[in-house]
Amino acid sequence: MARRVTQQDIARMTGVSQATVSLVLNGRDDGDVRIAPETRDRVLEAIRRTGYVADPIARRLAARHNRILGVFTYESVFPAGTGDFYHPFLVGIEECAERIGCDLLLFTSAPVVDGRRRIFHQDNRLRLADGCILLGQWLDPDELARLVDEGPAFVSVGRRDDAGGPVPYVGADYPGATAAQVRAAVELGHRRLVYVGEGTTGPESHADRMRGFLSAAPEGRHLPAPDLDAIVADERTCVFVEEFADGVALARQAAERGLRVPEDLSIVTLGDPTRPAATDIDFTGFRIPRKQMGWQAVEVLSGLLEGGSGGAAQRILPCEPVAGTTLAVARA
Image (cartoon, rainbow, N blue to C red; front, side):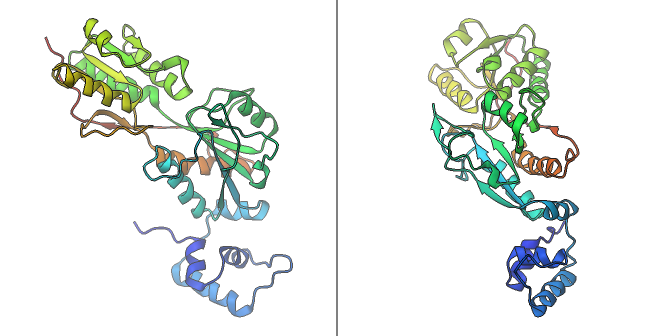
């Protein structure tokens, strides 16, 4: 399927700014800015030639807002690197924003307190944007409550508990994806299962994984950190790790002790790496729909800015199972 033509494409073809294309499409000039007739004709000709159709969401946003969407992260360093866990989220955010003709404003100067950025501070600039998308594994509940109460419009990438009211979000179905992996292990004969990670003491994404694990394995054990000695001593045959890097560490420790993965110990990773973890092992588990979550977060935010719900102010997307090679039939 051909890529949808955007206002940015029309601007490049005609040698004008995207703002000029928008003004032509809306049939108006912008204050003191006058568009020369030949420029208008050139833009309209490019529109006819390409078959460009303005996204209805973008048209409504353009009539009432600055068409600037903010992106804020609670991570201590703004996740700009291509290898960063958050990069696919940003790609989805950028692509959807481009499609609806909005610019992005990255809030990179927020102060870091106790290792995390803070939204509300003396030089808070959130109001420069029409609304904001929030990124981060952990979001401050007090700041979320203030956003719910005071605004501006925002959407969280990742499910969030209520904070004085419902929090708009686009999240991943961690409970369903985790429960499906547990059921697959049980079908292969595994009965002594263990979950490794923060679980209910961590952020919502970790609590959701733990909830899915316990729903399918109510007798399963929980370890807050990778502990191969405890796993072996308790004769657990299959490990479900919250963090991909913990799965890599356990596989390395098992190899050092002469244990084979998956013949002696099966390992299932519950998502993509959130921190560097070099390995050649093809782990069984699931992938998080990161790009789609970013894209749909923009859709939800645009809906909120229109005064609606963007289809739904809270969305949960399915994760993609990964067959991998680290889950095998339980040893007798």
